[in-house]
Image (cartoon, rainbow, N blue to C red; front, side):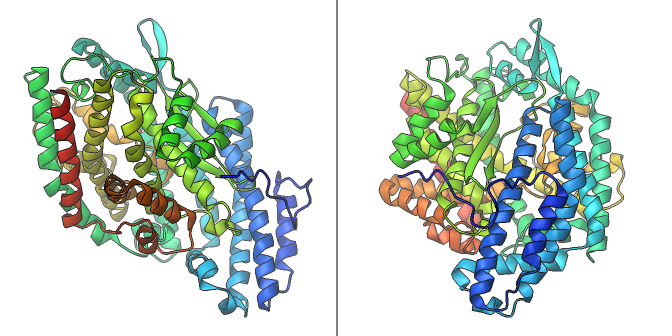
Length: 574
């Protein structure tokens, strides 16, 4: 592939920088004052609007990235808070005015459906949901999310005489010494529980704000508002609740079977939470970086083995210094990929600690990055993204497509097979956790005004529902009641979680297609990604050669395929 390095401005001057609200407002006002009564003037206006949005979006993204990379830097925090408190509220008002002007144009129906259909539907939805009185509430909500990042990012523990981040402590949980694993596990959660009241306070303030937003927008509860905000036009709460039931009935028996096997191999009387990451046969932890291949270069090689163009795409991030991967103190938790829309390049953030999971995370975020690159030639910013459910297909499919090539990191075939088994087991265990987090949110937001005790009790009952009977939590009751506090999605992106399970079913279909016809599967995968946001969710799945289907029948079929593959891999090294 040929890299296009620049996307020149045609409307904005080269020296324009969206640093303050006054200069930004002036640019948008020029657009608001223009006539867009015919097809040509409307389409030209849309191009200019997209150019301004791209510049503003990139400034916002860069401040967010700096904040998550350096939550302990006062200047970085001040810059991010300036955007949240002083600029973003004004942008919401401007955005609403732009949206209204767009859909009021008499030439709107003349625009092509393929390029504008989804965009127009989205804008109309946003206009219907907009309430000016919600802007200050959204500002406070974002500030609370930043406070959550700062609180988690500041957490560290003293272990082995050194100060360690929580992501690094995950390495200890893979060691074969059970006493050390227990010490590490307890150290992690003792530190989290020190701040449990602070984290609960943050969450409760967010819940209050979100409920008020829903009332302001004319909804009975935040769930109803949020489903509309997330543009879940192809499914609703009832389908999600049915999905939870399917996961309980289809997945839990398999999880119980896998856990019983782990318990027997470990030779322990009961399985404890610190026994889930260690190799059950007592082998040393998988350390993919010990052979001398760096994480970035190793994953680049894997991407190239999947398809040579993916190697070239990943080099865009390497050459552009668009990766921040290492875990360190003061860094926000988790991992993500975000877009710099003006230069049309992705950025990847994660917390690597030398584990096999780091490889899977970079493969995952790499899939998001490829999605961004494949879709970046769309003229309008609105068409350069996609529904979350499909975005996660891009990332999860890349994990599956890349895992056969883990020999880049491991000298022994047995280690490659071990890593692949661990990944497939992780897919199985993902589903119950998604169901737990999602069902928790359904309860949370349909029971406004609930107490902290009721929330904890509900979470505990949800954990009981998805328990397999194998895990022993005795003596860890407080920890168990607060496990959800480390799930950052609950704080920053409410209701964004069921997408992982829906998308996993899509990714497994891509993997199935690839095992049958690799070239065609990759061709379809890339074709789907290149559509950006120009098709509906079911149409995006279909263009990728898969079905948008999270029925029980589809879940059973695909999980059976995963289970069979695990058995084949286990037998190959037994």
